[in-house]
Amino acid sequence: MSHSGEHEAATSEMSENIRDDNSLDDVYTVEEAVDKLGFGVFQVLLSMFAGSIWLVEALEVMILSILSPAVKCQWNLSDVQEATITTVVFAGFLVGNSLWGIVADKFGRKRALLLSLVWGFVFGIASAFSPNYYTLLLFRSLLGIGVGGGFLGPAYCIEFLPVWSRPMIVGLLQLCWAIGSILEALLALVIMTSINHEPWRWLLGISALPQMVLVVLFPLMPESPRYLVVHGKVTEATKVLMMIAKVNCKPLFSGRLVTQEEKERMQQNRNPRAGVESRNVNYRTLPNMEENKQTLSSSDNESDSVPLLSSHEHTHGRTLSRSCVMRTIRDKMSKYYQWFLILFKNGWWKSTLLLWYLWFSASIIYYGGTLLTTTLLQHDERCGLTGGNDTNTECEPLSKSDYIRLVWTTCAEFPGTIWIILLLLVIGRKKSMSLTLFAAAVCYGLLFLCLGKTILTVFLFGVRGFATGFFQSIILYTSEVYPTTVRAFGLSICSFSSHLGAMVSPYFAQALMARTTIVTISIFIACTALASIVSLLLPIETKGRAMKDTG
Image 1 (cartoon, rainbow, N blue to C red):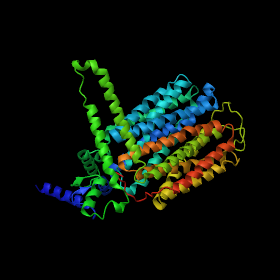
Image 2: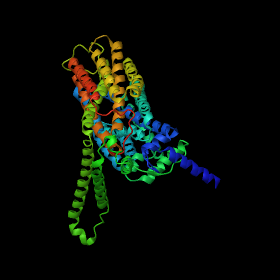
Image 3: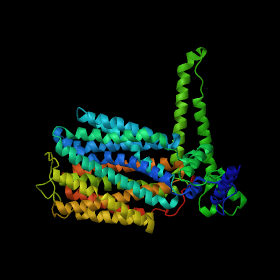
Image 4: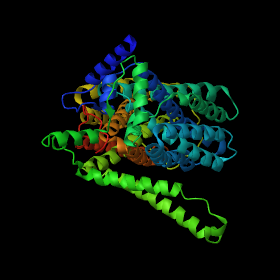
């Protein structure tokens, strides 16, 4: 009995601590619970797992700058064919981002991540056994669909983190990306210079193995409580929060878990002058959104509960079955359309449009810089920066010294990550992105100087570091600015834009670079400078701002 009394006292104390002066009695949100439970053992383990997902994607991205030059030499490919090997992967990313974003918002973050990892592993191994160029393109594009779900890793992790820790942890996740990139460069240095016959096949196969390791560990991870509470699974969300409290050795809490929207409505009912207006969010549109969700949910239940046809109904089975399928498709498309419209409601339209360009430019800046590294290092006999060839069909494989330089430029992601973490904490998200992009544009401009490979490596180091910092900051900003109801969908659409940029970057950094260096570098400078200006035009600064459940 005394133990029970102590437990009740502890839960009562936690319940009091988890509420602030503006809260209602026995009511709290996931945001409040996550902040009060703090950053403990659970968040450390989760961050390590999410970082591993990021590391796996980095392996598959980094390999792109190594694979295409090697295959070009073996199969005597043209510059355009070489660039296409990279482009099809990003095309798969584009499809995968949309697919896994929808799966994550419908079926949960955990299921989406698990399926994407299994998919990526299967076609990563298959790529290593490609008998010809076109089969390689097919398998690499399918692999891209699986790896395209990797963006959910940071978003999944952020939903468990208190506000103050998000910039730091997202920065640490980016370090995992850097570690993955460096590991891939080191793996390439060993395999590509020690195996004589088709070493790229070994590189592809070994690089796919870590995804299966994550698949085995995945059952240990919980579903996001934000996703659960928004989808009405309050009991499951509460169990997840209680588990986090136990792992972090925090006292359990009592009370009723609600969404941020529900709590603000309750506050407004108690004090009509508080709540919605003070937060500058127009919640009058939300009942319609909820009504649509209920309608779509009931439609889904209807379609799921259609009974099997009896023998009497078989004569009309084909018509009835087609009708059920069409109704289900219409319901699904209607729901996705509603999600898409939310990105343009309640003042989100400006942020959405600007973010689309920023994500598009982020890929051109980062992946373009990565691919430029191997393209420029391939040319030993010419400067490569003051002119260009009309054609470039000659096969010039990377030497051991080139792979070493590739490792050095990849190491730029470490200082780039430290740089952006400090900026995000001190001057906020928007100014950090703008300043980082300006520095990247300067480094791209310095590539016009023809000072030899050593100085070239230094400039490429700067490009890679600042591009890494910008990518990290735009992921954090987008995760913070969108509400839980559409966060994964919003991220998937932004990533869709990002991979459009990634798809065109190989044709700039590889195919166009072989013909006109001046035009190619100028395109990268213009894209980076414009993105620096656009980042300052974002209407919301998310530094210190609570993540919203609905909006």
